Amino acid sequence: MLNFIDTLPTDKQIAGVHCIPINEQGMIMLAWDKDEQLITTIGGRVENSETLEEALVREVMEEVGITLMEEKIPFASWYWSSTDTYTVWYHSKVKTLGKYDFQNEKTGYLISNFLTFELLITQLENKYAPRLQILQLAKKKAVDMQWITR
Image (cartoon, rainbow, N blue to C red; front, side, top):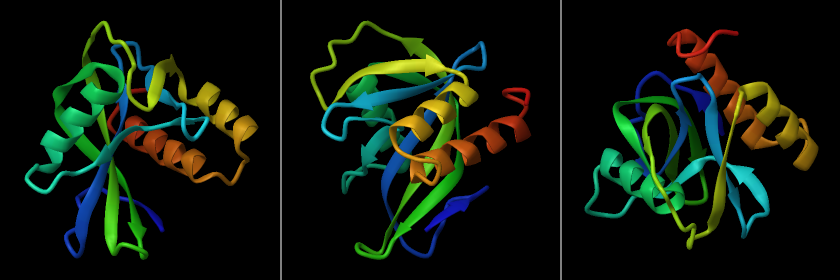
């Protein structure tokens, strides 16, 4: 179940962290997943010894070769009843976009505005896709934080 959040959930373990980075121009970054054959948010699992921030920093570097600014703001959580854990999505601004070889599951990143990604995800999946719902929550939070305008 997907929820809009302002603070991290504390009742269950957080096993996954994802991010929708925003650049200086207010554009967001998503990635192409070669296994899923879909546009997806950037992130993955939290290792046992990692903090959530360490996991997020590692995942964005491993998947798309970027670094993030210090501020990381949670905006959505998904509760997985099958594992009794959460995945949490964050916003952060892009600090550096480095040269990267994309040897993991992501083949590259895409940078665009929210509307274009909403249209792409609707076309590739459907208008009820969970990724579209996550994107809509991300947009709401980005507007609330005044990182983008409507």
